[in-house]
Amino acid sequence: MDRERIPQHVAIVMDGNGRWAKKRGQIRVMGHNAGMQALKEIVKHSDVLGVKYLTVYAFSTENWKRPKDEVSGIFKLLVKYVAQEIEELDANNVNVRILGDWSMLPKDARSAVTRALETTKDNTGLVFSIALNYGGRADIVMAARKLAREAAAGEIDPEDINEDSVSERLYTSGMPDPDLIIRTGGEYRLSNFLIWQAAYSELVVTDVLWPDFTPEEYEKAIEEFLKRDRRFGGVK
Ligand code: IPE
Ligand code: IPE
Ligand code: MG
Image (cartoon, rainbow, N blue to C red; front, side, top):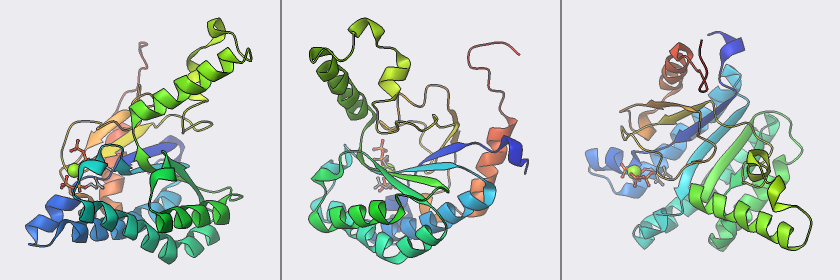
């Protein structure tokens, strides 16, 4: 693959865990567990491919609507993921970040998050962001609140607010917008993921369910991206 043209920032809507489990007569949490295994490989492969920023949608602000058991199962898997992977992530110079309000997570999940952030905070390799209790609208609301507070305090002039000042106050502050958004599970929607940041992202949807998303499928999605003609509103 042409390393020069590899997307700098890849974001993934990891969908289809429930359907994967259902197909096997298993409970949904088993699908999330299999999805976590798939994620491990995708993170490693991002480094191999030369992707600089990998952002994954792990839990949305809307996912609280799910049965309690499923929600707690997902957060238990987060704890397990950090326990199993953090040393290797750190050894590979991966910088873990969280997008979303994780103060609302169960205590053990918050401890795992704190450990992951602390351990990898000085790492300069792949920036791996996990969207947890993340919603694109909540992201924009939070930025609006920050701007309003700064304006009320006289720190900024409302007339000076521009696109960059909004971007700088989002959870993704300092990161480039995603070049490529991959959605597994076949649905053609963003489901409130990075809605501001996705303005000019290329979207690749695959029917493959997230637990079946292998590094090979990842490369296929990138190949698809490489065929796209990005015009950003201009002309060729
Ligand atoms: C995505 O898989 C993972 C989360 C939302 C946490 P789903 O659980 O939504 O899987 P499907 O869409 O029901 O198959
Ligand atoms: C999006 O998947 C959220 C995550 C992958 C974490 P959902 O399964 O929640 O999305 P909808 O409900 O199909 O839009
Ligand atoms: Mg789903």
